Each structure stands twice: as structure tokens, then as C-alpha cells.
Image 1 (spheres, rainbow, N blue to C red):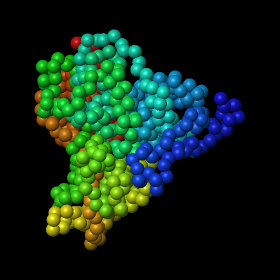
Image 2: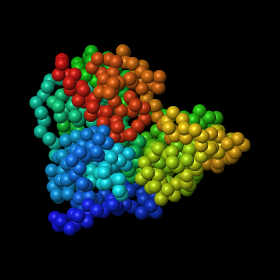
Image 3: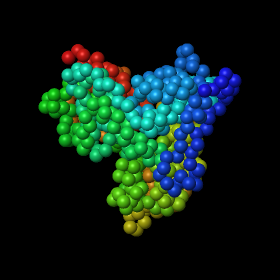
Length: 472
């Protein structure tokens, strides 16, 4: 245990305890996780930095309502078993959140310590507790009495997994339908192994959800294999949650986008992650990658695509983004890691045409220089082309990572479901849609957003669905 002087010293410490990680020159050659995580001693010291505020603002920044001072206080006391139980009272996927949640814009943005120095490393401490539990063995809480009510969850991504886990813990019979052959949604097909290990972390979190009593059925494409109407009328479900995300890629709509060597980030990352192209030929789905790769976009998906390209053997990888570094939507940590690994950033640059060779393969990209004008609807400065600044960028592979939109399959096959002009499902603050008994949350409602916001939507909807089921 720490003595009083040590505690005082740690409380005055302005910077987070650093988290050790692989050196850039080593990690670009493997798919192992980049950060190693805190050890117990470092976790206790970092947790001691927490001021244990009576009115904890950090909780206001957590979409899944975690008692942050509660679990951090238990870490500071060395009570790790109690800490993980406190954390999992609200969060069914703590090992995932501790790795991919943008804490800097959520809980840590509200931390009082951040006003005079760095906030408490809430995400790193969450990861520490989750990894501690994974190492010792995950405990399943006792199952509550059955309510006799049946709930269908469509989509096994972060929103669906969260809603399924919460509803099961409320005593409902929950069946989760997933279109792919493996669960996780964007957690499995979108986020690379070096950021979120699939078997070591994600699968064990999914196994925990299943242990709560959730029946997981894969290879079921709701809207094709079975419809929402049939889930009610033929299968006897009394409520349905739709959490199918935003998996339809967006493109630039410029000439040459159909050339060989042009990928959507969805296809590129799905091949690399879900289908394990990085282990070819042990797995039989390769990615034909050139020597010089351009990734268009500057969000987390773009950073994942760029860093994956390096690990697949590209000699040179460029981020091409039409705004400046201040407007890049990716997490600061992901941008920093990409730069450390050698990704080149071409800012204020916008593609206008993709150029192919005589065999239909990419050989270059025509771009134009941009300058920033007045803010647009997003609040970011609008990029304006500089007349006469066109140039040719020699590349042989292009990955388009400018966003995703919802797949229209469920909206097109479900009666009485109100859809926005962007193709998202209209839902109120509790996830209730225009159709009685149907709830929705995550990217299918908001458009492409973060994992933690999708989880928060799943949690809110689960609570609303529980209240609805009690009225039946």
C-alpha cells in the first residue's frame, strides 16, 4: 500500500503514467497489439491520481454510465476483483472499451485533473481491470428469474451486444442474429488486430455475453433470411432491437473509381481482419496490394487502413485528406501511431480522378490542392480548390475511407418503419422507432459514429425495451 506522502505526491502529478508499447520499427512487421497495458503497480499509482470528486463530471461523459470514481477508487486500494465487478455493473465490454473508446473526447474530457495537466487515464485503467479479469477467468453473474418475454437483437456489433447483454441480465430470453459467420460487427471486421485482438479479447467478451444467456445465431441475414415482420409473426418475439450499423461504403464519385486496385475501406479491412488476409496463405483471402498506397480520408478507419497497409508489405503509405491536420477526425493516439510508423500525410489535397493503365489497374491519382474557407454545416472549415493546382500522384493502390452509410436491406423489408433521407432509421432518444415494439440504436440511427456511442444507444434502448415488455 502507498503511504500518505506517496499519495500526496501522486495527487500532485500532472501527467498520466505512460503506457509501454511496441517500438514503431518492430510493430509495423507484426499484428501484435501495440500498447502493452499497465501492470498492477502502475495502475494503482495512476488510480491514486483520481481526486474522487463528489460530483464526478467524468461520469457525465460516459455513454454507458460507468461509475468511474467507483472502479478507480477500488484499483487505488488494490481491490481489483471488486473493481471489475463495479465496472461491469454497467459495461458488458470493458476490454473492448479500454482499447478503442475515444476517452479523450468522452470521460477524460470531463476529468477535473485535465484542467491543470492531463486527466486521469480512465481508459487505460478500464483496460487494466478488464485484462486482469481475462487473465484470471471471467465470472458470470447469477441469472435473474425469467420474465417469459422473448427479444430479438439484429446485429452483433457494439450496440447489439450491449443491448443483448443488458436485456439478458434483466431476465428476458434474448436471441441475437448476426449476418456474418462471426460476431462483433465493426469490432471484428473494421478494427485491426493490432488495436483489438480478436481471440484474446473480443471473442472472450462475446463469450461473456453468451454466458449471460444470449442465444447467438450467425449467418442469418435479417431482411433476407428472415424479416422483422416474421420475427414477430412467426417466431413469436415481442420486441426487436435493430443494431445493424453502417456497413455500406461511401465513394468519391470520381472517374476511375471502378479500376482494379481501388478498395473501399470496408472491403479492405474486412478482408484483412475478419477474413485474416494478413495470414495468407494460411487463410485463403488475399489482398493484392501495390508498393505505394493512398488512403483517402483521415478518420480512425483511414488510420486503420493505412497502418494495415504497412503491415501487409506496402513500401509507402499516404493519407490524402482535403482539410488540415486540425480537422482530422481520427483519435490523436491513432494519428500519432500512424506517423510513428511512417505513414505520410498529404493534407489539403483532394482526389479528382483515378488513372489506370492499359490493363485496368490503378497507376496514379490526379489531385488538386485545397485551402480552407468558411466553416460548413459540420463546423469545420470548408475546403476550397485552388485553381490550377492539379498534379498527378503516383500510386498503385487506393483505399477510400470517407465514411459509411446504413445498408438499406432492413428498411426496405420492414413495414411501418420510418426512415430518414440519409437512409437511417428514425428513433427517439430511447431508441423507439415508428413501429411498436421495434427499437434501434447505433450507426443505423446516427450514421457512422464511435463504438462507445453505439454501446450507449444499446444500453438506453435495452432499458426502454424492458419497460415496454413490462406493459405486455
